[in-house]
Length: 226
Image (cartoon, rainbow, N blue to C red):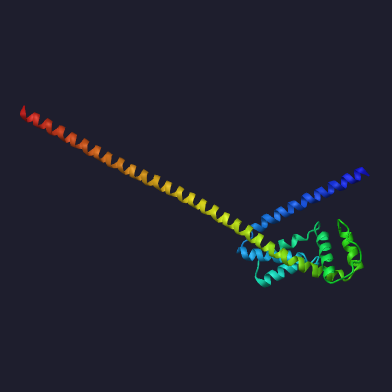
């Protein structure tokens, strides 16, 4: 029994680690989405809202369709839908059901467990056809404020990321320009040095010719004197 418990604990830990890894990759991919921060943030908020509705299996197509309709980021909407992932969906739908049932004054068909699972979620759907309506109402009620908060958080994150990237590119461009300027200066200095060397060599040659001419003239004069 203890071994089985340890194994289940290990499986849950692996699932949690895998989910965190997926969320981390989605977040990194989300930040790299091209587009205006407002469009990306609106798409993400839309995905969050759709993820709160009980539309299991078709949430992503719905979010992408609506994002395309409003001309928002389709990719960010698909990422936002992941708020209802295999680990969080039972809890989210349990909360939305309870919220919707209270608003619609529906009598709960059974008590929600402290730790909802997919099995309890399936039982809830089987025993209460009205649960879908309750979850829809509860999901919309909870999804709207959550989507609004998600919009501002996503907008701030994307804007900061894009600003950091622009500043990094600007620094790289400045360093490249500085390097080009230094290289150009060295080339100019090298050209000037070569020119000065040529001039100096020409002067030396001219002076040598003049010296030789003077020596020849001196010899001639000496010969005449003799």
